[in-house]
Length: 311
Figure 1 (cartoon, rainbow, N blue to C red):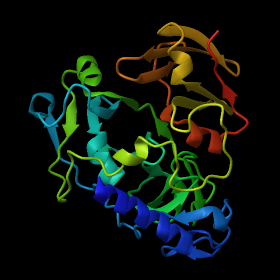
Figure 2 (figure 1 turned 180 degrees about the vertical axis):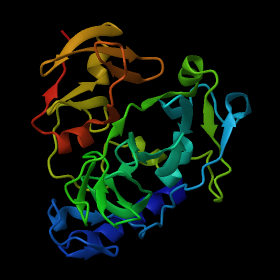
Figure 3 (figure 1 turned 180 degrees about the horizontal axis):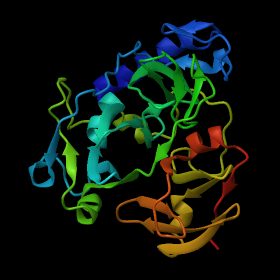
Figure 4 (figure 1 turned 90 degrees about the vertical axis):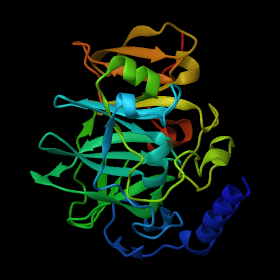
């Protein structure tokens, strides 16, 4: 616990030293012409690639994933006939996995500060790309960078905010943030990201345990709302330009499955309190890309969005 407190203090101290200053270059990235104010793009502490992405992921079958417990959180993705699970315990230390589903490059991303797991097609303008951790944050959310153009990308915006690809958007994929037991029950033949990552990390312990148990944020955000606990889990989705969020505290008051509308689209919401997972399904019952994150993070990016409340 003492080590985790020292880690948090180091990050906060580094923020006070460098993060509040507007600059046209940070961590080696050119911010001139950025879509976001340079003064709000903050150094998170580690340098560029100080948090190493996993670029050569190895996988094991479900029966070999003895390092997981039934309650272990994972990001699961079934795409192009391939099914894989990515333990949050590993993503906490790496934040990005550059992977392939068949011949399609895919980036699995996770921001521990926002609790947000998202998957993207890594094909940009028809060309495959790989991503790294920039060491920069916006609204406490990780900024990725692609190694081909050195453009910066906001995870929760799914958009390039600086560099040659500025303004382009990534295609989100329907990842599910749930428990290992739930994912394995749905997909018994799933592959699982192995702890054999090529790096020496203590995947049994989270460097963010004290942060998750605190109502405080480690970095400032542009706007906040006290409507819910800042780290209340929510499911957020943007559909046809309409942003809507489903706080778990509201979902827990109603049925596990119900019909709803997002803009002009009819959808079905499914919530499982035991696995702490939620999904948005289209009219054909297919999962739509959505993100489980914290209330503070969703609100910071979508202050004018719709908020679901239980009847």
